Length: 151
Length: 81
Image (cartoon, rainbow over all chains, first blue to last red; front, side, top):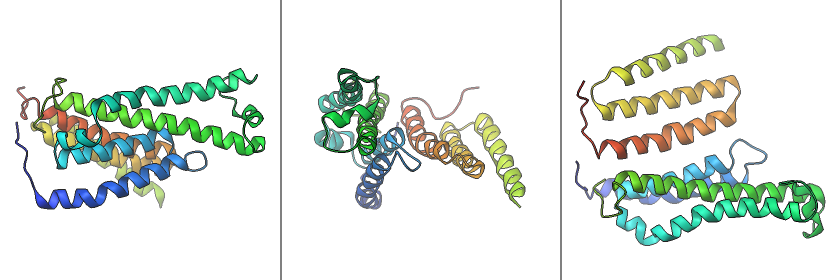
């Protein structure tokens, strides 16, 4: 087992890198439907930024900003967003996840609405993937006890 | 000459994969797997599958290496066999 080492260089580089990584993750999620990337990749990068913060600082430091209860809520919320957009299409009279029908309730033409629906799906996938990655690392590094860990 | 790059990358990928199995230090093994993932990412890019390469770089090299290191801290660093 290694102990927590408060290293100034690592913490300084982490403090500069984490916002850039998170902006890049949001860029990947937002441009997922017409360039490489998407919800899964962007969510992985977003989760990796929190994991970097956990490694460089402390798990308690991240938990103060991103509590465990909120994390678990986010896992369910992303899946709910995905299912809700799909079910909304179903309610409006089209197939599941057929976003074109959303132009009945949104003020735009069907082509733009289709891109908007894809963006909603990507956001849901990204939220779930980042929260699940964070939860997996939290469980791995604390033996699932959610106490103060040593990583 | 793209096939020269291809053969070079494939050779290093095989070396990394065999090294990750045979090395005794588990932390080195995790880092070798990360290097393997990055080289596979280069191979996917060279074959034109940019989306797969992106996933390989984000998941294989980024997240799973961090998970391996987090798991190794809970066990011993040396293999017993």
